[in-house]
Image (tube, rainbow, N blue to C red; front, side, top):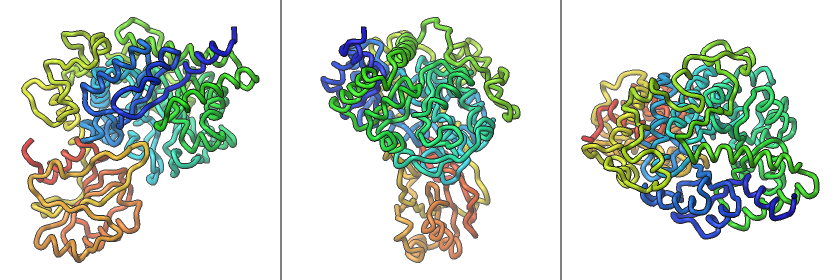
Length: 573
């Protein structure tokens, strides 16, 4: 019976809403009881571990199998640690290390953090192949520019996350790595042939699906050879013909935020974008970050109207809800024995990817996981003290009472992430992240003459995906003086005068992208002893006359600590 109340409940079952603040408003819980699939948490929802636990428990009071999603990628994109920076290096650093066991362990630790907070869907990992140095929205969120490298780490990341009972979502299909436009702000165009997509961009998604990822996220990008004039999110050829039928993925297809310009502007509004995405084959619609009850209801109402006037088949709506409910059941019962992995294709992540990834054979990197992507008894996560292992209270307890602080100090992870306690989980995770970040540091040139420097940090913007998160060496310095300057208005002569006999270490992100930044660094290096710490995506640009160029492959707290150590500037831990 397709009556309006039934349709409204079904429509709500396709939506991820959001709300501001550290407590859930009444409407956010009530709509869950009326069928809403879930909510996405952002930095503005996170204060500390106990508060997040109370918040997620309140959401479960409205719907026990609620999907509670978050963008927790490690590295430059963190919500749990948005006040301090992530204790884990991000994908670019993990790709630079290129040890899938480390990637799996780091993502298992991220998953354990999320599970302890009551979050059961991570909108990660990013599996885009970042082939554009000037990509403003992917960059260090990518494992690298090599298809085979990204593919093998995509599989490891999915296995790590899901070993903790947290659903993974590989993004952004069919690949956002070749763009030079941020889809939050416009509709990027990737002018690539289908053959190029299959050989360059799609293998990591095949690898993630083979590892059992519960979800794949769409990209608001236009690929004329595939999507025509539409973004991929609205393209049935992309989501059904390619992802479902050719690649065999049967899990949930989640949209990137529909409030983004790449979707909303193309459709004429968020409600219209929701209908077009569902019709194209998407299942779970992430509305965005600026959401309230009225917007959520208007999106649901537009979906109902679309079914009633024939724009959206009723069967497509029920299919989407069924896929979402299946993922929610998996996430609500993380230890249940559901062996129905949504991806049936195998990943051949190290060999030549010129063949169609959907025809590839299984690679041994996924042999340490079961069909749901969980680490088995022989899993690599055990080699790092098994950070996702259940405590004596049991994994289920994390959902029944997610705010409970264990004897190992879960609350410290947010209240004071750097605090060292005798048996603190935070210590173990910090050590894991720092060890990986150290291995990701690359030093070109010599650091020998850069002792006791003046540190000059260049003010840097941030993408919408990243948000405003602290970065830089300052929290780790041993009393070394640091200045923060804007490259366009800084005087090289004044900085050199301030340094005196001390060398200068310039710390920046994406230093190659700004002519003013490049000019400042090169003017300093022409007249003074200068080293550069690049904490963004490394390009081929190197400043003339610089004594050293240090690449961290990201700006997380762990990356910054590793850089400070490499320079010999670190304070006692």
